[in-house]
Image (cartoon, rainbow over all chains, first blue to last red; front, side, top):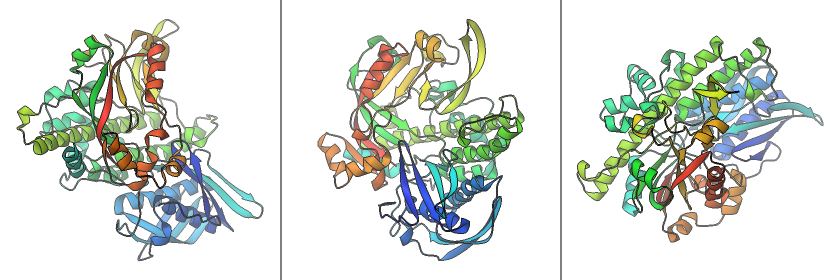
Length: 145
Length: 366
């Protein structure tokens, strides 16, 4: 079942009446952004079943780092919705507060191998937060289901 | 019923990222969908002019601007026209279990034990992308116009600003996409009934009772401090419920008030209500649009874990097919409030009046 196996070092799902959220952790900003993306695919499917078989390079710009996180995840969601691409690894060539360039790897959805039930309509700005807590980065993101 | 539900499940694409393989739209054609809504579908032979007479604004919101829509939205929407999607979206076969207002029910064409079909879906990935695009624009607009907001998701712009005007053109395009989507599904429902019951189209008379968009801002005139004012009424978790005589109700129902469709959960019941003068005065003609959740999706999954939900519903005489396992668990009846209690409050408050109760026989879920 999507999002069922806990990965507490990476993220924790947040229960939200009609929707779904997550709190994500990372040692630094690139890890936080990578974990956020991995967690989103884990909520949609089971990220451990995704194999890095093809790569795509993405460039995302935003007004600030929180906006950048939303747009980064939205970009991946768009890729999934139009190309059925599930991603599992995320490498950043650039990661500044308002701009990132990333190479992501994954494979197209295969219903035989990827459990997939939850349709994420959109990444929202609702209760969006990025902070440094006890020496590590933490972000909260709520999805519209 | 099993055959009907299987047929509906086979013929109407549902589930995560569901899309049609047989309807391939050109950019030009999609533009016409966005401008004409259900009118486009009927022009293609999916339904009749009579259907349009029974749809809000006759199935076409005026003021859509396809040029305000991004290439991404077009790309996401194009393969999804004629599909249900997932989450709380569904197609349900119901029967009329109770009638509270015989006169209105009769005027709407509803009678006791009659079979009804309820379709709940919208603009699919097209609408999500229109929203995503607007959020990006509005993040900047909020700062530009110096608006203080408590949460970034509430980003906005003055209604008269170019940002807002463009959004309205895109939002109405999404509404028309949704009208066309539901009209296509209506057509697929008719085809399925004809096919499964082995009847000619003229012998399977499935008439549209009403079709309405919710989660949208609509321009309406209401009394504010005794003066009529043109307002943009945004309803989220609510639906329009115009009073009798209102010019924005299709002519055939204008003397009755607007039909208000209130789906419940898949195990209990749904309701048809009708708009009232009191609702018009007190809520800018708004009513409830569903039961509302009692359990979050995560809680519902915990409650449903290990249970045979399909079997439980079948034992109650409700045949269910779902594209996703988690959807059924998230949508278990006890995840929702009892919609009869919600509807009784709305009825008691006079915001809209009860007309009929529908009970499910078969459900297809995304």
